[in-house]
Length: 270
Ligand SMILES: Nc1ncnc2c1ncn2[C@@H]1O[C@H](COP(=O)(O)OP(=O)(O)OP(=O)(O)O)[C@@H](O)[C@H]1O
Image (cartoon, rainbow, N blue to C red):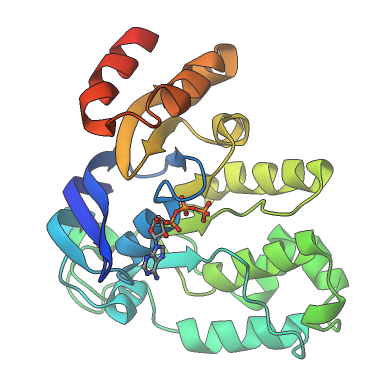
């Protein structure tokens, strides 16, 4: 579904991602883990089309979208839940949902790769078409809070609203950037349970998270990012059973030259 090949990207100030390779099958959950500044947000935003690619390729559903602008990727079915949630403090939950639904109408149904490479205008394969009502069924708390304004919501409720808003863009690939940032442990479990259920609704997920334990609790596969490079890919189950594998990959490549030590550190931890 999502395929990154030798992806290099960054900002005017310099390259942040150095040759990332990643394959995420349709309907699966993949997490990318790393310390602050490792490049998780840059990776998510590069897939969303918000950070320019300087080398390599991004393809979704077999179609190369490397040169496609962000708004066209959104229309084609790439949804983003940004870091920090970006909920409007003065708008109610219902207003957020209504606006997102209006904006997302027709999203996810255009672009060659949607619906298994169908033609423009063709309906999306089996992925769900979300409405404000159906996202409130998925997230009953939002129904209970429909009349509350953004600023009255807890951090967990704001995160649910941010996810609901992205779903109303009718994505098939959903990118989540640090969805548990600043949340209490019990709420983190709720968000994890929610993310695990999303593939049942036809979604493929890429989630960025600082903590390997959270990543391993939601994802089938976990990539460890160190200084903009992959320092290893593990099974979620493998990391749940042997959390030291992630710690080792994250810490062995530190002050030393990342390029020369990554291969060694990954080999040494398997
Ligand atoms: N808009 C920007 N312009 C220039 N450099 C940036 C920009 N955003 C991030 N960077 C740099 O890119 C590198 C990777 O940052 P990024 O935010 O992708 O990391 P991260 O893993 O998401 O970290 P965090 O957990 O702190 O969000 C850092 O060195 C950062 O300073």
